[in-house]
Each structure stands twice: as C-alpha cells, then as structure tokens.
Image 1 (cartoon, rainbow, N blue to C red):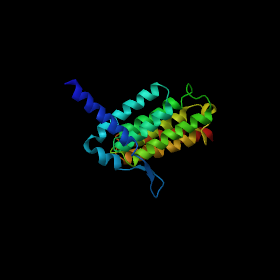
Image 2 (image 1 turned 135 degrees about the vertical axis):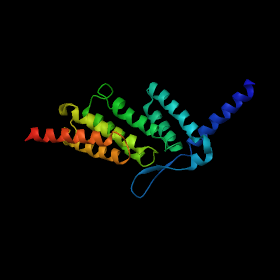
Image 3 (image 1 turned 90 degrees about the vertical axis):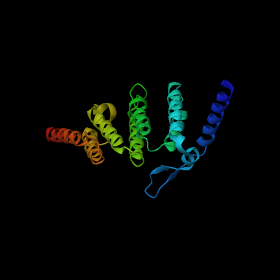
Image 4 (image 1 turned 30 degrees about the vertical axis):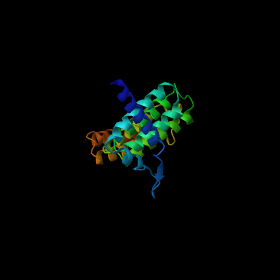
Length: 201
C-alpha cells in the first residue's frame, strides 16, 4: 500500500515544482503587482492546499536562515492563493517584526527599509485578499508601533507625528473595509496625534 501512496506523493511534489515555475507577476496600469491565474487554473481546487504547502516551506526556509529563498517561496504561495489574507499577513508581519527588528538589523536605514517592505506587502494584499480589512488593520498597528519607538532609534521620516498620521489613515481604511476595531482604533490614534501636536506647540 505504501508504494502507490509514495508514488502519488512524489508526483504531487513534482507537479508543485512545475507550478512554481508558472507563477509570474504582472504590473497593472496602476502599478500594483498582481498574480496570474495560470497556476490556479492548473491546480484548480487544490491551489489553496498547494499554497499551504508552500507556506510550510517558507517557515522552514526562515528557520534555516535562507531569507531570499523564503521570500521566493512566499511569492509562489501568494500567487497560488492570493485571496487568503493569512499569507499576506504572515509575510508582512515577518518583514516588520522579525527582519526589521533591532536584533536582526541594527542600522536604522535598513530597519526602515524592511518596515516599508512589510507595509508594501500588506497594501498589495489589500487589493486581492478576501478579508482586506485584516491587512489594513495590521498595517495601521505597525505604523502606530513606529510612532511610539523613540525617534532617535528609528529616525522615521517626519518623526512620530508623521507615523501617527499614517496610522490614522490606515485605521480609517480598515474601518471602511469592515474591520470591527478600525473606527475605535482610528479615534484613539487621532486623539494621540492631537495630544502630540498640542505638546509640540
């Protein structure tokens, strides 16, 4: 019994390897990167399952310290199932809280670069995910987090006030996309911004 099962598993793994070569990205008129539907058409109803397998490989590659390979695997997974917000969420969160951490990257300029990369992933995901509000809300939380980091440490352009302004806009967008905590969080960030502006006078 194990022989046929092993052969089927091997054929499926080989099929995934072929699909990984067939998931290029194209740029639309507004500059957003969007996944093609070639791989999804080829895999049909098992595309989501294939994407899940790719996310397992993503985690393994990160544990091995193979970041570039991990990011290539993540792009394949996103192309296979762009509607699942969890993938965009996982990649964006990793870039901000792992790759951009002080432990991983002590240089402020590099930390800012990775944070922006994570925010870009989340905003790109908002265009394709079935639950874009979750991605907008995480992006807003990240910007709020940036606002409370001492400016001397990160040196965010425009300082904490600029990060707070961006957080307010992102929380408002999350609310518009249906996130249940978006409006309340936007009000909190807006009040914090008003207090910061008042103290700066």
